[in-house]
Length: 267
Image (cartoon, rainbow, N blue to C red):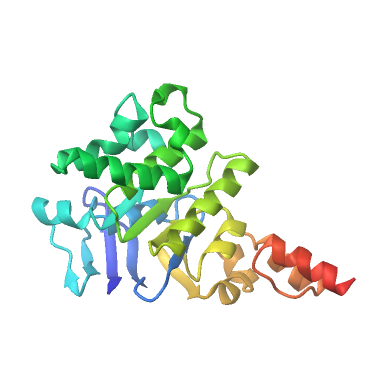
């Protein structure tokens, strides 16, 4: 079980930024959190991983409320990891290999195990060619992949991705979608925040919509994205596939490939 119950969060004893949020991640492979800038998504993510302590409510993991003792948080973050929107916030070493291996070295893991796990992660993300590169010469998209690799080295059960396609060109975005899909297929549970509605529609199997720190809608992708009024209230747009379905009467499909296949069948 992994859920958030009645969560309120404030900064420095000011008014709450998050207001009585309850989210349940337990039964889903990829949960999306939708909201415009300033809605509270990043604050929610920081609370989920224990970087912010709520003024009210709890994070429940494995049926136990999160304990904020340093030793407990250390163990918890080996199972619930986060990749921030800006990769520079979690890349600390000048060589990719050194940065990705850091967490396991810090845990005292045998070097042979570190190498084996690193090979697995680099293969999964298709970044083998980056292993010995200086970080300063990486593209923005490559840095995002390295940041993901550093978290995956811990074999986290849950991975929070904050705006994973932000700042990426179309090719980089497609590569990120493929990475997230592979992670889901291999059993990693994803909690995803993004302004990219097409990404959220394609990847997520359940969605929560937040506006000004309050929950205004939840449901499966079809329920949420067909509700145009709620999306407008939250400052969001419908995915293009949903617009085509509602405006032109095409069948509602999940991704561009399904859309093209449907068009061919119609012809």
